Image (cartoon, rainbow, N blue to C red; front, side, top):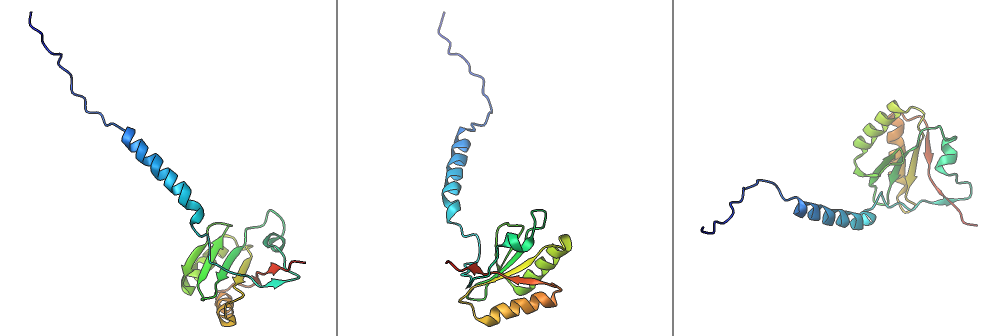
Length: 148
């Protein structure tokens, strides 16, 4: 009897182990780089003795989160809604559209403007005036409390 090699049946299965390895490496890269991503417009707020926190301005816990508009020293605009990520580099028309839409969804939301202490006064006034023309009735200005 002669030796006959075993005939192997061909299988068409995808080997997923390399894909899992690649996904784990990507996950690690994203986890390492995530803390370095900036979350908002870099704003240095002016200080005052009578500053209140956003929670104090809004009131009780059942109130809606404030709509925060930030103006940096170069006049760049940012918007944060529901304590979420800051949308940066918005044009004034885009910002007003988003604020109007949010106020239609949550009419009791407070609009707060955070102007950088190094920003020219005209940038903050232009933003306040545009919000007023867009129909925002009441706008608060954000400040930092003075350290005693």
